[in-house]
Length: 87
View 1 (cartoon, helix red, strand yellow):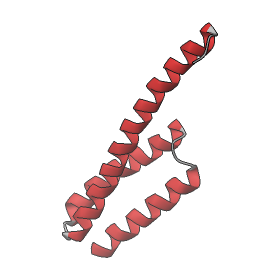
View 2 (cartoon, rainbow, N blue to C red):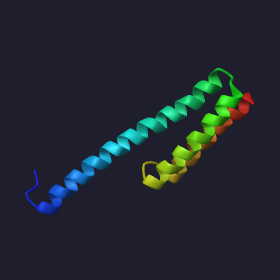
View 3 (cartoon, rainbow, N blue to C red):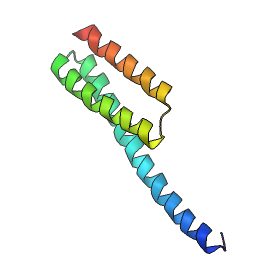
């Protein structure tokens, strides 16, 4: 454990951030799975709505630094391809 006051504060901040990132990552995965489930059931309207929500969350993940921009582009492309196949 750190003895330096600024490092103790930093450890607390890092832990809060880690918990928030874990929560966001879980919600992001759920949003992506919602799109995939809608595609499996051939529900085009639900898939389109879920795709828009997933796009927004993926873009936010890039802004937070959780995803690299190329990974985000790849995920968005693959999701849109799945949705376009059922439309």
